[in-house]
Image (cartoon, helix red, strand yellow):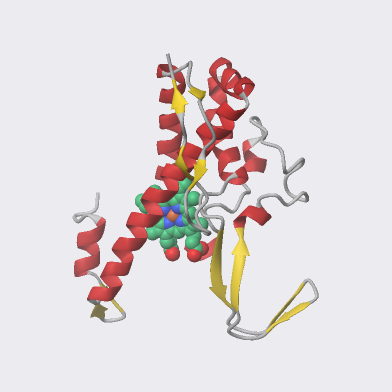
Length: 197
Ligand code: HEM
């Protein structure tokens, strides 16, 4: 076990021979707060929305609760809580016939990549039982060196949350249309009107 929590570790750590300055610490804390809170909230509201908008899906999950993990991964693929991100090219790149000069600002779309028909058969359908080794190829947690630090806990939280919701509120239903959060980079619901008996 670490002797410090993550934020205390940031306070005492040395990187390249120096401590983090206040702005760097602020950015680390902001990244943890927004990256760790807004995203998992959106994952839960998105998956509940997709399951309730077609009530047969909710019924199926109740009958086959072992599909919870597949459903969470399908939700991440179909409705990535962060729909796109940015990079700066470090050298000239040629891609799909386009020339990108060095230091181009690039926006890449997880939402687009997650609908790639070469990777996901029938990509525009929400399929509750896609095999895990296929569906987990989504890019909703990023890829490579900056792959999401919180992915294991986000997956666990969502699985536990959805399992408990199905057990405790089996008659959950939508009572109106959801309202999207006001952001062009986050994909989640600000309001999801539901009721239960
Ligand atoms: C469904 C929930 C989540 C989604 C969709 C998500 C998505 C992402 C994505 C796409 C990236 C990569 C950003 C990039 O490539 O520049 C990322 C990185 C990161 N995430 Fe998450 N995240 C989630 C939950 C969490 C949680 C719960 C935490 C913290 C407890 C967290 C902390 C971080 C951090 C610190 C990074 C930066 C990693 C690095 O740059 O090395 N995330 N996340």
